[in-house]
Length: 159
Image (cartoon, rainbow, N blue to C red):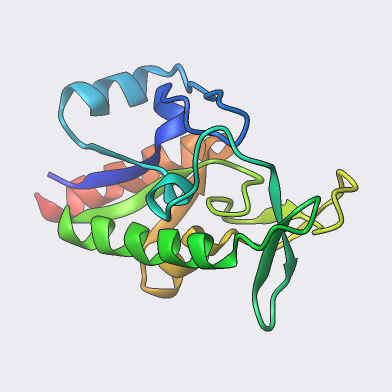
């Protein structure tokens, strides 16, 4: 059975920077959860950050710098969370991940610009990038239909 690494906030865990969750209420998620296929994970908490915590954005890519609006450097925690996301995905046999859109850790396609302007730019979060770099497909909650198709294709290939 193929497992799916999933951002813990999408399962209702209050791990977001603001102490909230972003529960994703969908029949496929509920079914996968009943089947024991979901592996909840929050890279930021796993990396050592508290909940709640100041919002953070990727300030620069090379060298990587992730900080809060007031300049706190969260880079080590974000990097550690990215490493742990890959470790957990590999350990639990995850074929893919469903991660939170627009997150500096979890997004697979766009993140905030690093200036706390509310502007989204093309790019991925650190954990999502680490997973993709190692061949693990990453989807966000806006791409759930694509994830469902991906899982169906994985299942038919394994049969």
